[in-house]
Image (cartoon, rainbow, N blue to C red; front, side, top):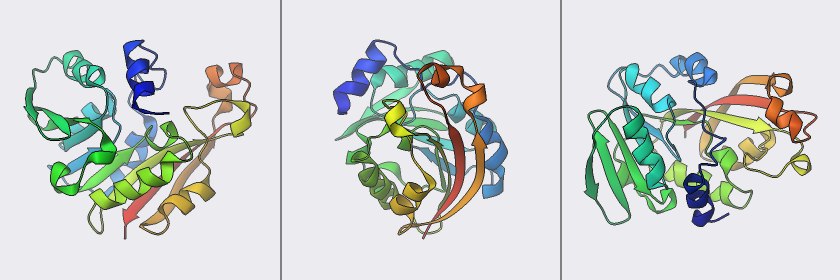
Amino acid sequence: MDTDFWHERWQANQIGFHQDEINTHLERFWPALEQGHDKRVFVPLCGKSHDMHWLQQQGYRVIGSELSPLAVEAYFSEHGLAPEKQQALHFTRWQHDNIEILCGDFFRLDSSDVGTIDAFYDRASLIALTPAQRPVYAKQLANLLGKGTPGLLVTLDYNQPDMNGPPFAVSAAEVERLFGNDFKIKQVYSFDALAENTKFREKGLTELSEQAYHLTRR
């Protein structure tokens, strides 16, 4: 899966990964990270997620990273915002008050692009990536964060041969392999989610679980 894949998904409005509601794991498990108001929260591969709006409502400054300009434009439009745009070398910065989205390739960002990050949130980034891309993603995320930076990671797990991703299956063992060297990992939630996910049952899945983790940069 290359960048063209995601551009084509947004152009065709094939965005089943987008949630119209705030993610319940964010509401439940984010407060335990104990981040004070006005902290900067990084949301990689953010799409037009409403979760960013929820984080803003809690008093955070949000910085997202998104490949598709259609997704970025949709976020600001749907929230009635008129962002300022500033072109940089590898991305365009869209900003309005305490929300900014860097539109470009996440894998080309460096710490000077994102600035100081106090916490991060990943609901649909890791599970959107192929097995070959996930180690590169985990290392890039680690490189953008300072020591002690906490975050919330949400994943799905199922029998991968039963369905083509994305979303891809990511097991607890893989989370440990990907992040164990650079992060402290604590699984805070695991739930059998098949019964409440009709679309996955229709695709032939016989098992599906959701996991949430607190990660802290070592």
